[in-house]
Image (cartoon, rainbow, N blue to C red):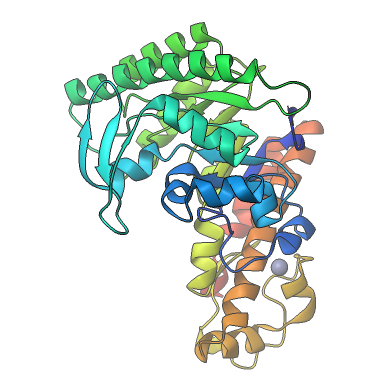
Length: 365
Ligand SMILES: [Zn+2]
């Protein structure tokens, strides 16, 4: 268990970051997130740069003020989105040219521009531009993307250091390095070691959970995490389900983020201590027990499965909100439990107990 100090407060790790791509964690208010114990939110520079645009956010005084969230924010540069969403990409050593996936407008962004954008967002933790590849990816292509990621990391670091020297006091941002290299251990190792030489405040594992088999993913995460320094935060980007989180933390991961709690929430799927549960299930029509008996969230202390099922079946927005709220709370509570059992040196007992209940599956009862 560790701590990470940022300009907007201290983050206890291991931690899970709810995702607010557009400056909002879908359907939930910042107050609800705070009450659920969220310590840090993740947002996305690429999306916010396109909409509402940096002029608006600068006028608002940064993203914290704009969205009314005064705790830490980590922003992804959007490298992954540029490579997965944007149209007509041209990647050059200098930067990346693309067309907006929203209105087709053309943009050219260099690593330095992403540092500027994230400075204007006033992100606490800044991610450099990186090149993501899909799975499967040939070794030479993955190597090229990894080399470019390293070069961009170096440029980002230098530019970031020059920028930060102008800012006095507590407003300091933190810059992480991102390890790429697809599923190839040699590439991951080279990338991690060179980033360590550049000396970042924390290190992220990028390009994970992009379609590779789970065992391969677990192996790569473990392999890279073991190379990275233990006294600095290690952040696994875009992962994952509760079982993936537990596995990652066991490998030494300190920070994770994923859209899963709210995406599943909007589909009417709840994560519970007894496994995943489909709220629309006809078996719940007269079930007046909470979604999860062990959960203390507003949804579980106030509403029955029968009512939530009714809301989901009638397409009522409250249903999606309440299930999302429960899911976010479930993920955050899982991290609090993990923090406690790590402190008490009981992680393995906890893991066994968690899977013993979770793998039964709430739907199959
Ligand atoms: Zn709950």
